[in-house]
Image (cartoon, rainbow over all chains, first blue to last red; front, side, top):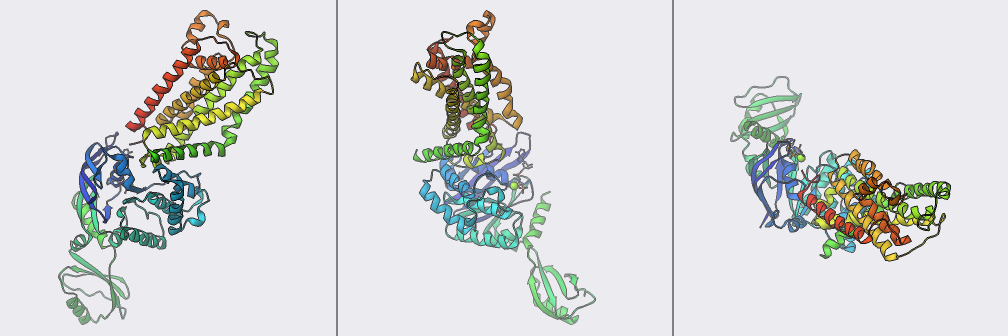
Length: 304
Length: 255
Ligand SMILES: Nc1ncnc2c1ncn2[C@@H]1O[C@H](COP(=O)(O)OP(=O)(O)OP(=O)(O)O)[C@@H](O)[C@H]1O
Ligand SMILES: [Mg+2]
């Protein structure tokens, strides 16, 4: 079963901005799907169309087989949304925001109450349930929107940059939460600017740029496209001069740290040996994070 | 269907909680203004005015003053609440849910009706300090006040749908509602006007509401009560349909 299937989706805003130029993509049930793209690429527009906040100007979309033109109410029941921008009433209490949302989905009060307790506790907001939402911190507001988006037990949860402006520790705990949710069967679509986040979480990744999907593949496949490997090497002894080795870019980060980049396929043992010949002993090494970032920039740059 | 009713109850509950929470802005002002009207027009000036159809001036204006409070409060409740939800974007909570359009309309409109009726009741209570309550036909009183309040709640919703700024929220009440209300026969009987103005007044819908409501209390009216009721029902149907049409189209709600 496809959790989401969109076909030639188009959107031209009233002011003439063409936000989507006929994008097509599928998301399988159970997937953890990353939708990546630079600012203004059309991510929020796509999500808006699926949730009824933006009217499409062309194409079709189905959520678990329910067409958003023909069976929108059924489709809406299956989707949960965590929007990019804060959109709750800042004068209302945390618990009321979650309970009212349950009400809009037709969930009886007693069930709503027990779910609200479950999610607010899981997201660390239970203690705050009776405060006015205005007084929450930015990270708490994000988590409140996650609880709100889950209250009707959607089969597909769409998060639009859920970790923007969230500190590292909290981001990790949100990742854990989302991974557990995905494991328990909820299909997740996530947009993000943090490529590390997509690398950590997503099974499949699509890259959208200027209203077009320029890549849609598994994360593994995407990473293997990287034709260069980058490593950070910690050295046993500090060095003064950076050695020159053919085909390898070596950058000195500090006295005893080097960054090396070399073409995939080249043996790393060979590189180590050569370094050793220059009297450089490697204490430890790590892969450079954000490898996706480079690829992403390459891809987006290519299509310009 | 059950799901729709829960959603309706949720909207309604939220609306009522809202105006009760800020009662000093929603319930109190009209009660105070109307007290002043009763003192000034009823007591000070009214005592120098001849009886109308056998009723003292204060008796004559009381129904109109109640109606005025009902009209303003119903309208402004819905327009400010709905526009407020648009402004804070929490209307999106409803839009992403499967809540059907009719539930949104009924929820907001009935919220406005409840505020209108509560304020109407408060003003009625205030009037008891100045005059005694005469009731000619309670059914008509209830019908007129309910339908009028519903009409202006629906009109407020329509305004809220189109409003883009807080200015748009106050334009209609200031430039349309207030003049029409003052010229709607609250303070005078149509017969005191020159023929031209009598003719023009016929196009003022509020005249029919005020007169019909007054008929329920005092048993006389400048216009046909049946015509008044028909107009009200017609307005409800038309306004409901307009709201439904524009919400379905996503006017002011979807980009
Ligand atoms: N309401 C609107 N009216 C007109 N143009 C809009 C509207 N909303 C978005 N756009 C335009 O549509 C394009 C896509 O915007 P969208 O918000 O979908 O991008 P995004 O990928 O979510 O970007 P970001 O990462 O910055 O959130 C942009 O050029 C944007 O300016
Ligand atoms: Mg966006």
